[in-house]
Structure formats: structure tokens, C-alpha cells
Length: 620
Image (cartoon, rainbow, N blue to C red):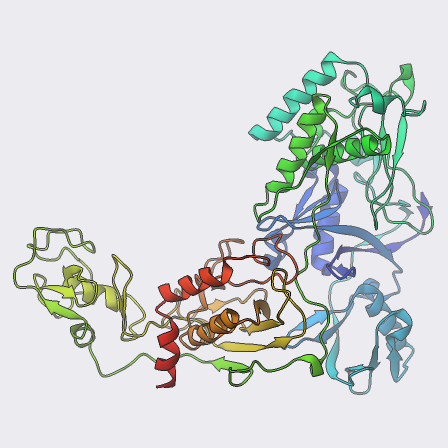
């Protein structure tokens, strides 16, 4: 233990290899769960303290941030800083992004800027820490040394990050104190998959006193019972004892030493309340109680065992992580490995490919306009509904009166067409027994029901058949005001090596809902903007872009509703026209290669009433 005091900042690793700090409030929340020990369950739900982080959970055993809707894992760390530095004073330095919102600097950069600010330097050059920027305190601006582009910066006060005083651990560990380690373990997971794993592992453990590795692997285990495994890039070494117990985890080198985390679980077979046997007692090491292992730890156990097999030269059966966006896929891959290893089969869990959300950096001179497409951006504001025509007058254009209705049900009110409409809402001005046939598709309804349906919609002069979805007139949506930018960048998408890439950037700010939205007068959020989307610069890709521009002008790309991924209500959501937001991979299902994507999105646009004829209509 090291006698010192420090502020604790929890950080996550982004796709560019930079450690990004969580906010002080989030760091306090994580720290509170860490200090509570196993009683807190070993995971942190970030949405409890910040609604914008609703999809994210931190698993303290593996030190990973897990995104529930995509299954994306990112390493996290518990870092220590001087109490006299910026995080110890609640000082946050931020820069203004293209969307007009503020982004905090990495903690290392923020501390450097604050130090120069306190010394009353007129400016600070960040080249020495790897950034080609100069911060000018007189103008509170950030200047790019290469392009001379300037951005605003600001200094604001926030909560002070959590403070640790007295004795500090030399490395990250969980639990963080003997008291926490002595706390009763969290109840085991009771889902069918974990129950299956527990039963298989228990059967193997009870039936054998030796380690779980096959004999070829066992003979390479040193007499100490501990195997030191090669660490993956960017992580600390992991140690595995002869029983398969993981003896280490992601640790922070503080300051130059790394210590091994001791196992805190009671060995299998030890009586409750008795002291755990020390490693090596009776020729065995402590065995982690299977009931206390989380699914993540089981997966880590399988991976660690497979590394031992690889190191010993035993042939392995590859079990690849499954592709797709379901959050259970990585767990299924781990469980497969555990079941195979429990049965004595060698297993190798392959590393998943890296997620590539964005293209390599592009300079301003490399960004080009798209041939055949005018301008490079479009703004949209709220379009007013057409006035001067009643719903009855609008529908009259699309309907033919039916004097002798068939003996069928009206699929809106479910009453017979030969009987009056069963609609009980606000009374339209037409008679409830009138029946009409839509001119193009031929479906028949009570005119009374169609008028009621039109009044409950966008009232934009269009009508969509509720049976076959045929659109009459020009359908518009309720997308809030925003901006759509589009241009060419000199990089190719996977699967499209012979052409450049069309990049689309959508920007929508939060605001107040209008009368056409679900909750008029209530504020709405806009998460994840600006959103970057990608199309190949091919003939069909440009065709899709032109139709997306029509959909944008008609306010059909986004809507306000409830997010299917986070469950948040009154927020901006996609509106049934899929976009590719992953540039260089397809791990989430929203990237390339995808041979059918362009055809699929053309079909989705057609379902919204947008086809090649629509571009001519927009010009008219």
C-alpha cells in the first residue's frame, strides 16, 4: 500500500486509443459502487446518474464498459491524479464542436491547460503532449497549428472528482478493501444459460481433483500452480492458477509497479466462516466458488484456459465470436468455450475484429462536392400544413363513392360496410353510413372513418391506405428542424473498393415539441448528433442520396418518439429508413460490406412514397 492522497477519475478507451474521462458525477457513482464491494453486484448502471448513458454498464470484474444495444465492449480504468490539478479543483476545460455543443478535453490535456492558466501564461502549445494545437487564453480559442482553424474553448467549474486519502492501492482491484472482500457475495445469476454452465462446471469439478486443462496442458503448469499468460496489447498480464482461477485483472501501473490481485473468494469445500487456505496448501490452490462467478468472469476463464492451450502447443478448435448487434452474442461465445473446456475439449476464442466507426482524418481540401448533386447542405424547418381545405375536401380527390357497399368489414372500425361507422371519437361532418373506394388500390372504407384517420395524422394533404400502404398525395413527416450535409471523401468503403465515399452528416439540436409531435410543448432530446452516415459514390449510391434529400425535405428521416435501444421517450429517433453509420466494419449490422443495403434502402424509401419520380416532383 502507498501512503498518499489523490483524486480518482474513471476513464474509458475510445476507438482512437485515447482515454476519455467520465464526468465527475459519473465517477462519483462508479466509485460508490466500487467501495460497496461485492454487495453491489460488481456492475455499474451508468444511466442511473446520467440519462444520456442509459445503454451503458460497467463490469468491474473485467473492467469493461458494455453497451447493451450493440454489444460493444470498451476498456475502462480507475486513474489517479494530483489533488491540486484540474480534476481535484473541479475545473473542466472544453472545446466547441461543429454542432455548437461542448466536448471535454482528455484529462491529461485538461491538466496541462489548467497548469498554464494558473501560471498566467498567455498561451500554451500542446505539441509536447502529442496535439498540434495552441490554446490562446486571451481569446479563449484553440488554434490548429496545421490548418489555422480556430475553435472556442471554455473553462468551467464542476464537481470535484472523488478523493482518496490515506492508503492507496498500487493497482486497480475489486473489491478495494478487506472489509469489502469479507462482504457476502452477490447471489448467482439464475438465467438458464448460467445455470447450465454452473451445472456442467460443477459436475466436472466434483468428478476430478485436478485442474480443468487437458493433460497436455497440465504438464506445463509450474509447481507453484500459477501460469503467467501473455497479456493482450494494452492490458496487464493475467495469471491463472492450476484450478482455472483467474488471479489478476486489468490494472493501472501506479506509479511504476504492478501487483497481483489476490483471489478473495472462499475455496470450494471450505466451511463458511473458516479462513481460506493459502495457495499451495495441501498441494492445491484456492478454487473460486462457481456460484459467485459472473457470466463475464466465466467468459474470461474460458479465454484464459484457451491461452494456456495455445502456449502449450495443443491443437485448438476455433470458436469465433458471433457477428451481429445482439448484446448476448459475446456471452454465447464465452459459454460455448466454457462448455467445451469443461468437457475436456481444447478451445480457442478468437478476438473479434475492431469496430471502425469513422474514416481516417480528412483535410478540408480533400472534401469535394458530389457531381450531379447541387449544394453541399440543406436545412429544414417546420413546414406548415396546407390550409384552406377541409379533410373532406382533401379526401374527395382520392375517393369514389360506393352506392352499394359489399358485405365486408371496414378494416378501420371493424363494422360492416353496410352498417354505419363504429368510430366513436370527435364527429366528422360527413354521414357515418357513407362508403368510399380509394381510386388507385381499390380498398373500401367508411368515409367517416377515413376522415377521422386523416384528422389523427399529420394533416399534410396526403393519405395512406391502412391496408396496403399505398400513398395518395405527398407524404410528409414530423422531423424537427436541423441540417443535412453531404460531400465526397477520398476513402473507400469495404465492399466498394473502386469508388470514393459519400459522407452524410445529420445535425438536429434539442428543442420543444410542436403540435404535430407526441407531447406538444414538452422538450425533446437529440442524442448522438451529429450523426455520420456513409454511401458508396457509385451510380446507385448517388441515386440513394438524391432520394434521401427528398426524404429530408419531406421531414421523413427522423421523428420524435421513444428510442428502441435506450427506452428514452421524447427523443429524436430514426424513422424507418436505415442508414449505415459504421464506416470501416460491420460489427453492429450498420456498416459495410452489405451487398443488399442499397436495394433495401430504396425499398424503404419507396414505402415512404419516395421514388425517382419524386425528384421531378420536388423540382416542380
